[in-house]
Length: 460
Image 1 (cartoon, rainbow, N blue to C red):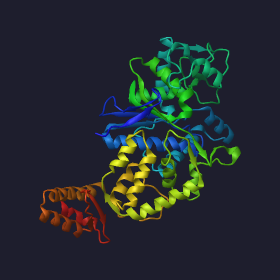
Image 2: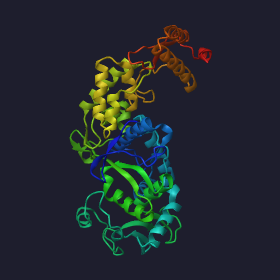
Image 3: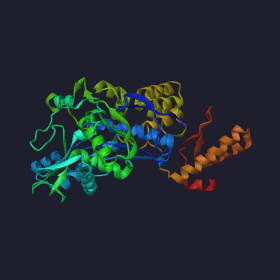
Image 4: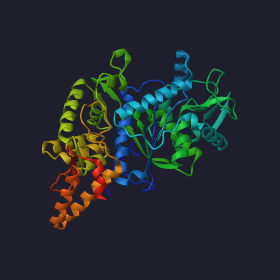
């Protein structure tokens, strides 16, 4: 099995990844607050952890990986948007959630196995808060419930800061009811015009941090393998998640491995509306930039380095992908290059993997190029924005019939039963499947113009 090594923010070093249960590899990634379109920076962690998800599925099997990414659909920004627009909150969050899913699908991101919404887990949040109070880790004050940071001795370990440093360097909400300036809100009161739920502390709504702790516990358990997100979430969000989760469920260790991606810039500057370089994923798609091009630019920079989006990179990515698509259009099958797999297994070294794709293209190994690119979510049929024929539509059962015959043919070639190998080749070509022989015995084919899926029944 491929050995995966990941840089663990918690330990500040690259470690061999050893899942708690190889039959159920579990990953949680903080998702968006759904009040508007996702900007380009929001998309970077989606693509980063999509590549990790694909790698884990490749190594452990799709049925042995559980990926959870949440939607924050109760938040003051959402409330403000509802007030500004006069639209119902539920209508806004439903619309913006679908926007997010559509835009991320255009970038080739697979949907996670679970996509919980915060409003679906309010009872679980209330139960977790009650336990934290009962165990002396939280307290009620003026209708609020706050986590007592002093009750968790390891607070600050993830970000490597002391509490005094965090107070000095953060915007700490000053409130007279806090025992410690760093104590953070678990529950707060709601006025009649704001979303609210009944609780032991009155009608109110959860703080931001508690939702991820409650949802990850319900879906992944007290201990799971990987927690990811942008490095802007390391403090306070992830620091607070760890504190409340470990105190509510001391029997577990919460997340074993923490991964954080760096931020995004545009033409060497921080993206901001004041600089006029702020744009959403949807903006680029509407301008005719294929989602695959956006993805390729992202993958060309390592996730732990700042990524600079430039027009030059966009043009180069588009030219490369058009070339590769013309080379591989209509090809099927093939195995992932060892070089690509090795690069991704080395802390998601996507630039190294992209370099290997360039090498495969240069030597004309079209089959391995396409199979390897697919592991990165590139050169697939799902990504829109390209006017390229993706070949005939064929169901999975029919594709399995072809692969089964090709596997039998490979066995015949290896055992030097060339008569059988030739017979299977002729049989496949009779239904319009052209067999592509390779030196490394890859299972690969393309469809001829006279391909007829109805004739595949004869292969059974």
